[in-house]
Image 1 (cartoon, rainbow, N blue to C red):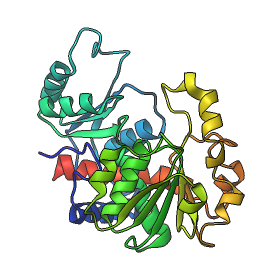
Image 2: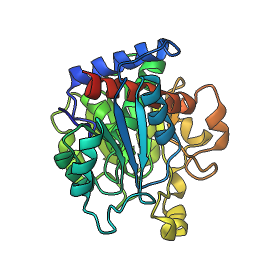
Image 3: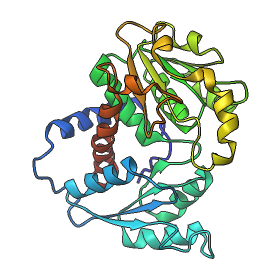
Length: 300
């Protein structure tokens, strides 16, 4: 049994095979499938979700399986029941657990006790399924990943971590531009050492974006940070991906965002609908990579 708790839980060869399978599944969508027939997958979501919830639900159904939705409103996890006990029981009922949680530690605890594969659908530290969709999208638009110049503009958050590390593992040159004190955790930069590509933290967004093939951004204000909203808008003001910043990127650069986006804050709304926008492909590709991952972990 394997879990998928972070973007490097699969090695490079396994990741490339999974991405190839996702491309096949995308091309074959609409053909009846039954690999997960008779199998049940629990979705445990502590955080609200649209793309993650819908893409995993549709993925399981299209593979012939069934979904059980769980969360704070219909469980007692954290309100009298330990997540270890919850995971140990749920693992007796289902064949896999997809968890979208605040704490990476809680996710790892669930994985240790569930007895079935556990997939990280997002934690405060990692967003590996988003990273898979991002890499598939970049492959579709740019082809070769080795040597690709990738710029992330904004906080060194779970998306910057997972997509940055995965691309660096596959040979890309990754630069993350963040305000002082809001960059990637030192442990993430340490983890990038020895990978096939590079992962570099800078403060200047222009330096990060210069000659980049891909420019990526994310919200300035995540769930749980609402009290810091005004302060964050001031701190991140010069980290907006707009037409002026994109002039420093490669002429054929694409723009990415994991959504939802706040137009006029981290991204210029016009960019989202231009030809160079890859946002909608990213969102769709969540479905296809998650199908591939479910087949890898649950169907063999």
